[in-house]
Length: 154
Image (tube, rainbow, N blue to C red; front, side):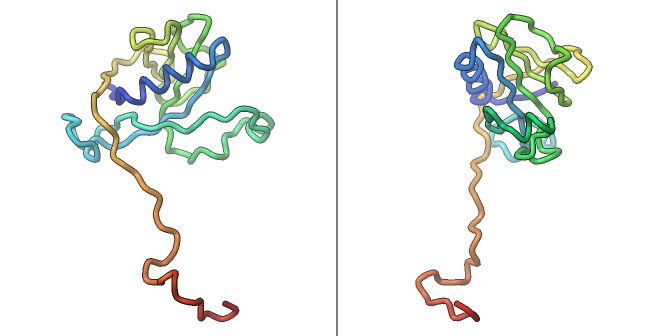
């Protein structure tokens, strides 16, 4: 059984609706269920919670076929929209371990999950929020920014 948050499903379907008549491909990341309050599933179970924003006109990706902005190994899933209505994995899709495919009318009933080999995978949409994330402060917390820099050259 696969798990995905309702917020992520709604966001992905909105992306697909806004991109129509073109298709869209969005890398998906997971969070361990133990980090999600009220998930109600075993702690080590991966839950699809986040995505990496698709970029238009990415020259490096177009030339080399490699997404250099998405961390390797961090996106076991992919969302793909098929505006023409083929609710299955195609040879043109960017495959991952799990591929969520959506078709018009872009609602949850028109979304399916597939394994890399194209077999339908069961999934459950969870009404939970992913854990809040923040960027680590890149400066040394022991340094007071109001004090002058007394290091060499500073």
